[in-house]
Each structure stands twice: as C-alpha cells, then as structure tokens.
Image 1: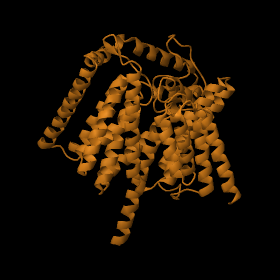
Image 2: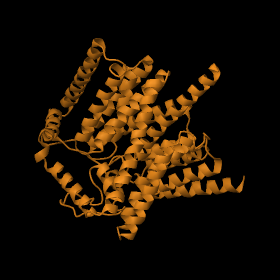
Image 3: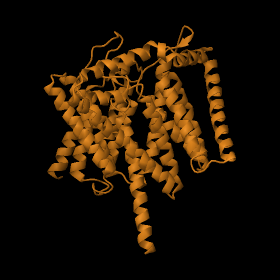
Image 4: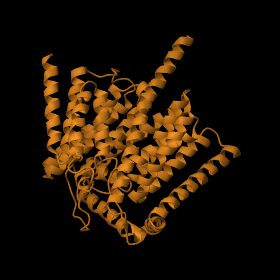
Amino acid sequence: MQKRHLFLHLVLWVHVLFVLIFIKFTDVLMIGIAAGILIVFVWMCFSIRHAISLLIFYIAILPTYTWGSHYPFFHGLYFHEGVLILMAGLIGYLYLLHGPENPVSFRQNNTLNLLFGIFLVCCIIAALHGSFSNANFEIIGTEILYFGLYAFYFIFIRNYNIKHIHGLMILIVGISVVVSVEFIMLAISEGAVSSILINRVVTQQPHLAQIALPICVAYIIFPSRVHVKILSAISIVPLLGMIFFSQQRGLWVGVLFSVIVIGGFRYLFDQITIGRLIKYCLLVMLSFAILFGFFLLIDKLFFGSVFLTILSRLSTLSSLSTDASTNIRLGEIMRALDQWDNNVLTVIFGTGLGTSYESISIERAYPFSLDNAYAVVLWKMGLFGLIVFLMIYGSFYIRGFKIYLQSHNTQYKVIAASLMSGLAGLLVIALTNACIIRYRFIVIWVLIIAMIEIMYRDMLSSKTERHSHNK
C-alpha cells in the first residue's frame, strides 16, 4: 500500500473514532449504528461521490444538538459541526488524492465559477474585517463554516456529470422522505397536542421538503413512467406531514408558490391557450382538494386540532403590520443596518463577519443573525457582497430557463423546471429566515445549482457536436 493511501486510512479511522466519541453505547441499537458507521466510512474512501453522498445524508438526517436531545431514537447521536468540518476535509483530501472524477476545465462557461469564487473571497475579506473590528471570533468561525459551504460547488461541478443527475434527484427526494418520517415521529414524541392546538416543533429539516415536493409534483404532472408517478405520489404524503407539523408560515407559502410555479411551467410557459389555462386551474384546484383531504384525515387523528392550528398560524398573515414576530424581525434588521453609520465603505463592503446587534427581545437568542438571509449578507458583506450573492442565483435561473427553452431532452426540462420551482420557494422563505446563508443544508442548495450548471454545459456541448456534425 502506498504511503498516501496508508495516510488516508489513518485519517479515516481517526475520523471514525471522532464520530464514535459522540455515541453512547447504551443499547444494541447504538452498537449497530456504530458498526454501520464503520462499514459506511470504509465504503466512503473509495470514491469522492460516495463521500459526498454520505455527507449529504449526515447533514440531512441528524438534527442539531438542541433538538438531537429530543429524539428518543437518536440519544447521543446528532449533527456536530466538528464532524462536518472533518468530513469536508476528508472529501478535500480524497479530491487531492484521486483528482476530480469529472475532469473538465474551470474555464468552460466560467460565469458561475467566477461568481462563486468572488463570493468566497468576499467571505474571507468580511471575516478579516470582522476580526480587525474586534468582532466575536467564535461567531466569525461559525459564519465562515456556513458561508464556506458554498465552496462545495467546485467539488460538485468537478465530480459529477450528466449521468449522475437522475441519481442525485433520487438522493434528494429519498433523503427528504426519510427526514419527513423522522420529523413526524419527533412531533408525535414531543406530545403533539397541547390544549386545542398542536405543539410546534422547530428544526431546519422541513426546508428539505421545499425542494423535494416540487420534484415529486413535476414527475406527476409532466410525462413520466407510471411507477415514477406512483412513487412520487407516495413520497408526497410524508412530505406534506412534515410541512404541516413544522407550522412554518414561510415554508407553507414557499411550497404553495413552488407548486404554482411548476404548474405554470407545465401548462402556461410554452404557450397560453384556453385548454392549457383550464388544465392549470384544475391542477391548482386539485392541489387544494388533496391538501384539504390530507388535513381532514390527520385532523381525525388529532381530535380536531389540525384545522384550528392551521387557522391560528394563517391568521397572523392577515395582520402582519401588527404581528409581534414580524415587527421584532424588522426592528432587528434596522438595528443591524444602523451599524453602517452612513459610512460609504461600510455600505459597500458591510460590517464584517462576527458582528452583532443589541437584541430587542429576550426570546431572540442569536443577535449575530437575522431572520432574513438577504439582510444578513447586506449587513455583513455590504451591497457588493449582496449583489454577487444574488447574481449566483440569477445565473442559476438564466441557465435553468435556457435548458427549459432550448433543450431537446424532455427529462432535462422536467428536472430544470422542478429545481427552479423548488429553489424559487426557498428564495421566498429566505425573506423570513437565514435558510440560504446559515443552514447546513446550503450543501444541498449548492448541489442543485451545480446540477443545473452540469445540464447546461451538457446542452451546450451537444449543440456544438450537432453543429460540427452538420458541417
């Protein structure tokens, strides 16, 4: 065995030991989980894509420490930032050891490459700015960790190609379904009903449904095989359960918006006719009917608390100007941006990572973040950082629309439409929380951007080949 492979295995087993430190061997289940981890980590070392799949599974399935203690079937096993860093480091080492598994030139269609590179440089500059401004170093480290997850784009784009897109779609939906079952079990274990309303369980995990549900809807309404439609319909059930139990108003609005968008892609985008318009309206009506039937069914299981809970959460949307939560969030954004103090350089480049504001509510435990992803970037990285950040997602949509309009491959169109619809809802939700800037699921959001880029490059390559052949 070569020395570099021996070193790799040494890193691997140290990593495994690190993970096992956080596992309490209190029963047979934990021992089984530990054994499974050993097997999976051996499997992981043979491929960068294996390692990436394991990382996505890890960040999705395991809750954070706060909520991990509430999962009766997880005990001491939970998401740990140190493990995330070590796994990312191991993927980086595998990349250096074996080289990219999809070796394409970085110069090829480099708009997104350039934007991601500039954004990451902005993150480093913002971290240095925060350090020189005596900001909290612990917060700087945490924010660099999450902002830095956007660097996974380069790993994805260099290790996946068009042959892997379908498998990645299955991975995203499959993991989301598993997480939805897990989340529903958590909601029930938390003592689902309190008084006449259902208890609210708050975790980041329901945001995965924002991506997975539009994918399932797309495979149902677009032409696809019967078994794919059936599996998609089955997958929607637990996803809807997780969406409901999350009681996140932003998620409800985002998912509804995504379904409307995917329906628009299917029936209205190519051409608008009376027949297509009728089909679109029928799809919207059918969606509401299915939702009503679903909620009616689980309402029976919770003794009439479901509809009361929904009405209680939705009633706040009709009075946002007087809603305490909304006013607190807006107040926090204004306090954070007040730190600019009319300084032109601060307006352009931000206050730096690690900065915080004086909280106006005892309940708000994170004065270094805001419940608006765009406001966080604007505050800490300035107008320049926000523009670059928005250009990344803008380029994603430019490429996605080009695939949908120009590709001759039906599956490309379905995938592009579903991913654009899912991410559109996520960008709406980002107005109410920091899901695209401070969640560990950034790895998955970046994977979606990379998938569109991979399809876009393949489409351009196919066009070039056809053009050359015609000559």
